[in-house]
Amino acid sequence: MKTINFWRFATILLLSLTAISVCGETVEEMPKFPGGDQALMEFIENNLHCPKKMLRIGTNGRVIVSFVVEKDGSITEPKVVKTTLKKKSGKPYENTRIIKKCEEEALRIVKMMPRWIPGKQCGVPVRVKYHVPFKFNQPKPKYPGEERNLQKFLENTFKTPQKVADAGINGEIHASIIPS
Image (cartoon, rainbow, N blue to C red):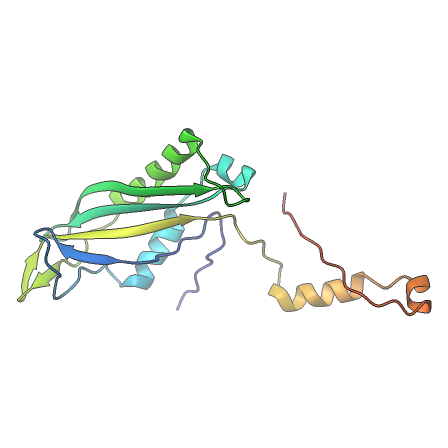
């Protein structure tokens, strides 16, 4: 089984998947992406590209897209339901160009999806409205060999200065690593 790298250029978090028939009823059998939820997450993760400016300025965001899974499994009526972008400080980010790029990217992914297995009501395929949130986050830097090797590297590289050790001073150093 393939492991997904959720921290590449953008992370995708499928926060909730809602299936309601177009006539407003809950569906007995929800539509399914070919291969299931794991395959859907892989599809999004492999195809989603976070706008470069968003990465540069450290903005995170979420775009929720709704669409209809038709009786034949095709995707129609994709539209953005809600977009939220935030600065590192947590305040809303209002650059309309970046918001538009995130929305366009989420819609692009939905439009390129393959046919789904349609939802069913009483064993009969029905049209179903579906919501998928796309989360755009700053990538988490990776160290070759993961955290264990990073810890060993730091322990072997950074030594307590002799004067500090002789004085019996203990403490911790907290650092942030910002990949370029």
